[in-house]
Figure 1 (cartoon, helix red, strand yellow):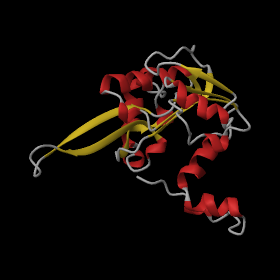
Figure 2 (figure 1 turned 60 degrees about the horizontal axis):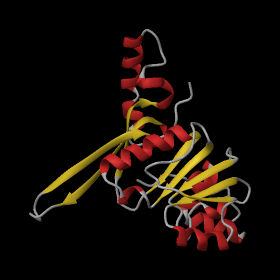
Figure 3 (figure 1 turned 180 degrees about the vertical axis):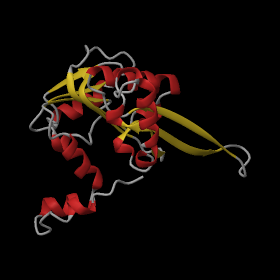
Length: 213
Protein backbone atom coordinates (compact mmCIF):
# COMPACT_ATOMS: atom_id res chain seq x y z
CA UNK A 1 0.00 0.00 0.00
CA UNK A 2 1.71 3.24 -1.12
CA UNK A 3 2.17 5.94 1.50
CA UNK A 4 0.58 9.32 0.93
CA UNK A 5 3.33 11.90 0.65
CA UNK A 6 1.41 14.31 -1.59
CA UNK A 7 1.42 17.18 0.94
CA UNK A 8 5.18 16.96 1.50
CA UNK A 9 5.92 16.59 -2.19
CA UNK A 10 4.10 19.85 -2.95
CA UNK A 11 6.80 21.73 -1.04
CA UNK A 12 9.48 20.64 -3.50
CA UNK A 13 10.82 22.94 -6.19
CA UNK A 14 9.84 21.03 -9.33
CA UNK A 15 12.41 22.94 -11.36
CA UNK A 16 15.29 21.18 -9.62
CA UNK A 17 16.30 17.94 -11.43
CA UNK A 18 16.91 16.04 -8.19
CA UNK A 19 13.49 16.97 -6.89
CA UNK A 20 11.82 15.93 -10.13
CA UNK A 21 13.41 12.49 -9.73
CA UNK A 22 12.29 12.31 -6.11
CA UNK A 23 8.78 13.44 -7.02
CA UNK A 24 8.23 10.41 -9.24
CA UNK A 25 10.11 7.94 -7.02
CA UNK A 26 8.45 7.44 -3.64
CA UNK A 27 11.04 4.81 -2.73
CA UNK A 28 13.93 7.28 -2.98
CA UNK A 29 11.95 9.94 -1.15
CA UNK A 30 11.08 7.58 1.69
CA UNK A 31 14.56 6.07 1.93
CA UNK A 32 16.27 9.46 2.01
CA UNK A 33 14.03 10.71 4.79
CA UNK A 34 14.41 7.55 6.88
CA UNK A 35 18.21 7.97 6.85
CA UNK A 36 18.24 11.59 8.03
CA UNK A 37 18.91 10.66 11.65
CA UNK A 38 21.40 7.87 10.87
CA UNK A 39 25.21 7.93 10.77
CA UNK A 40 25.91 4.24 10.14
CA UNK A 41 24.34 1.66 7.84
CA UNK A 42 24.62 -2.06 7.12
CA UNK A 43 23.17 -3.47 3.92
CA UNK A 44 22.60 -7.22 3.97
CA UNK A 45 22.91 -8.97 0.62
CA UNK A 46 24.11 -5.83 -1.17
CA UNK A 47 25.13 -7.67 -4.35
CA UNK A 48 26.68 -5.81 -7.28
CA UNK A 49 24.41 -2.78 -6.98
CA UNK A 50 22.37 -1.43 -4.10
CA UNK A 51 19.25 0.63 -3.59
CA UNK A 52 20.87 2.30 -0.58
CA UNK A 53 24.00 3.56 -2.32
CA UNK A 54 22.61 6.94 -3.51
CA UNK A 55 22.29 7.89 0.17
CA UNK A 56 25.39 6.38 1.81
CA UNK A 57 27.99 9.07 0.98
CA UNK A 58 27.42 10.82 4.33
CA UNK A 59 27.29 7.60 6.36
CA UNK A 60 29.71 4.99 7.56
CA UNK A 61 28.41 1.97 5.67
CA UNK A 62 29.16 -1.71 5.22
CA UNK A 63 28.02 -3.82 2.29
CA UNK A 64 27.63 -7.51 3.18
CA UNK A 65 27.20 -10.43 0.81
CA UNK A 66 28.21 -14.09 0.63
CA UNK A 67 29.02 -13.88 -3.10
CA UNK A 68 32.60 -12.55 -3.36
CA UNK A 69 32.49 -11.66 -7.11
CA UNK A 70 29.48 -9.41 -6.49
CA UNK A 71 31.27 -7.64 -3.63
CA UNK A 72 34.35 -7.11 -5.79
CA UNK A 73 32.26 -5.40 -8.49
CA UNK A 74 30.46 -3.35 -5.85
CA UNK A 75 33.77 -2.31 -4.29
CA UNK A 76 35.03 -1.07 -7.66
CA UNK A 77 32.17 1.44 -7.60
CA UNK A 78 33.03 2.49 -4.03
CA UNK A 79 29.43 2.34 -2.89
CA UNK A 80 30.24 1.49 0.75
CA UNK A 81 32.90 2.46 3.28
CA UNK A 82 33.77 -1.20 3.94
CA UNK A 83 32.84 -4.64 2.65
CA UNK A 84 32.35 -8.00 4.31
CA UNK A 85 31.91 -11.52 2.93
CA UNK A 86 29.46 -13.25 5.28
CA UNK A 87 26.40 -15.50 5.41
CA UNK A 88 23.20 -13.51 6.06
CA UNK A 89 21.90 -16.39 8.19
CA UNK A 90 24.86 -15.96 10.56
CA UNK A 91 25.45 -12.23 10.88
CA UNK A 92 28.71 -11.49 12.77
CA UNK A 93 27.62 -8.31 14.56
CA UNK A 94 26.78 -7.40 18.13
CA UNK A 95 23.58 -5.77 19.34
CA UNK A 96 23.08 -2.13 18.29
CA UNK A 97 26.05 -2.13 15.90
CA UNK A 98 24.43 0.15 13.27
CA UNK A 99 21.85 2.93 13.26
CA UNK A 100 20.02 1.29 10.36
CA UNK A 101 20.13 -2.19 8.82
CA UNK A 102 18.81 -2.65 5.28
CA UNK A 103 17.80 -5.75 3.31
CA UNK A 104 16.70 -5.11 -0.27
CA UNK A 105 15.35 -7.90 -2.49
CA UNK A 106 16.66 -10.48 -0.01
CA UNK A 107 13.93 -11.86 2.22
CA UNK A 108 11.88 -13.34 -0.64
CA UNK A 109 14.76 -15.73 -1.37
CA UNK A 110 14.68 -17.25 2.13
CA UNK A 111 12.50 -19.89 3.72
CA UNK A 112 9.97 -18.67 6.27
CA UNK A 113 12.13 -19.74 9.29
CA UNK A 114 15.21 -18.10 7.73
CA UNK A 115 13.24 -14.94 6.99
CA UNK A 116 11.93 -14.68 10.54
CA UNK A 117 15.44 -15.23 11.91
CA UNK A 118 16.85 -12.56 9.62
CA UNK A 119 14.21 -10.04 10.74
CA UNK A 120 14.99 -10.80 14.38
CA UNK A 121 18.74 -10.46 13.78
CA UNK A 122 18.25 -7.14 11.99
CA UNK A 123 16.21 -5.85 14.93
CA UNK A 124 19.03 -6.80 17.31
CA UNK A 125 21.84 -5.32 15.22
CA UNK A 126 20.10 -2.01 14.51
CA UNK A 127 20.06 0.89 16.98
CA UNK A 128 17.30 2.95 15.38
CA UNK A 129 15.50 1.15 12.57
CA UNK A 130 15.40 -1.60 9.98
CA UNK A 131 14.37 -1.24 6.35
CA UNK A 132 13.02 -4.13 4.28
CA UNK A 133 12.39 -3.90 0.55
CA UNK A 134 10.74 -6.82 -1.25
CA UNK A 135 9.11 -7.29 -4.65
CA UNK A 136 6.63 -9.90 -3.54
CA UNK A 137 3.51 -7.72 -3.44
CA UNK A 138 2.36 -8.07 0.16
CA UNK A 139 -0.60 -6.06 1.41
CA UNK A 140 0.48 -4.28 4.60
CA UNK A 141 -1.85 -3.36 7.46
CA UNK A 142 -1.21 -1.94 10.92
CA UNK A 143 -2.35 -3.96 13.95
CA UNK A 144 -2.08 -4.01 17.75
CA UNK A 145 -2.59 -0.28 18.15
CA UNK A 146 -0.30 2.73 18.07
CA UNK A 147 3.44 2.11 18.38
CA UNK A 148 3.79 4.40 21.41
CA UNK A 149 1.18 2.46 23.39
CA UNK A 150 3.22 -0.75 23.63
CA UNK A 151 6.73 -1.41 24.89
CA UNK A 152 8.98 -4.40 25.50
CA UNK A 153 7.32 -7.80 24.90
CA UNK A 154 4.23 -5.96 23.61
CA UNK A 155 3.25 -4.83 27.11
CA UNK A 156 1.11 -1.67 27.31
CA UNK A 157 2.93 1.51 28.28
CA UNK A 158 -0.20 2.78 30.07
CA UNK A 159 -0.90 1.34 33.51
CA UNK A 160 -2.80 -0.53 34.79
CA UNK A 161 -2.31 -3.02 31.96
CA UNK A 162 -6.00 -3.77 31.39
CA UNK A 163 -6.55 -0.08 30.70
CA UNK A 164 -3.51 0.03 28.44
CA UNK A 165 -4.80 -2.94 26.43
CA UNK A 166 -8.21 -1.31 26.10
CA UNK A 167 -6.82 2.03 24.90
CA UNK A 168 -4.47 0.25 22.48
CA UNK A 169 -7.39 -1.65 20.95
CA UNK A 170 -9.30 1.60 20.48
CA UNK A 171 -6.49 2.82 18.19
CA UNK A 172 -6.63 -0.24 15.89
CA UNK A 173 -8.98 1.59 13.55
CA UNK A 174 -6.42 4.41 13.25
CA UNK A 175 -3.42 2.22 12.43
CA UNK A 176 -5.08 -0.36 10.18
CA UNK A 177 -4.60 1.79 7.07
CA UNK A 178 -1.63 3.71 8.52
CA UNK A 179 0.85 0.87 9.16
CA UNK A 180 3.75 3.26 9.67
CA UNK A 181 2.12 4.25 12.99
CA UNK A 182 1.36 0.73 14.20
CA UNK A 183 3.17 -1.44 16.75
CA UNK A 184 2.92 -4.53 14.51
CA UNK A 185 2.49 -5.08 10.80
CA UNK A 186 0.19 -7.62 9.19
CA UNK A 187 1.51 -8.56 5.74
CA UNK A 188 -0.69 -10.63 3.44
CA UNK A 189 -0.08 -12.12 0.03
CA UNK A 190 -2.61 -14.19 -1.91
CA UNK A 191 -0.85 -16.96 -3.80
CA UNK A 192 -2.24 -19.16 -6.57
CA UNK A 193 -1.98 -22.93 -6.16
CA UNK A 194 -2.69 -25.87 -8.51
CA UNK A 195 -6.41 -25.18 -8.64
CA UNK A 196 -6.63 -21.74 -10.32
CA UNK A 197 -9.97 -21.03 -8.63
CA UNK A 198 -8.58 -21.40 -5.13
CA UNK A 199 -5.99 -19.42 -3.19
CA UNK A 200 -4.33 -19.60 0.17
CA UNK A 201 -3.06 -16.74 2.26
CA UNK A 202 0.35 -16.47 3.88
CA UNK A 203 0.32 -14.19 6.90
CA UNK A 204 3.43 -12.84 8.56
CA UNK A 205 3.60 -10.37 11.40
CA UNK A 206 6.66 -8.66 12.74
CA UNK A 207 7.67 -5.49 14.51
CA UNK A 208 8.47 -2.72 12.02
CA UNK A 209 10.77 -0.61 14.14
CA UNK A 210 12.63 -1.11 17.33
CA UNK A 211 10.70 -0.01 20.40
CA UNK A 212 12.98 2.12 22.53
CA UNK A 213 12.71 1.28 26.18
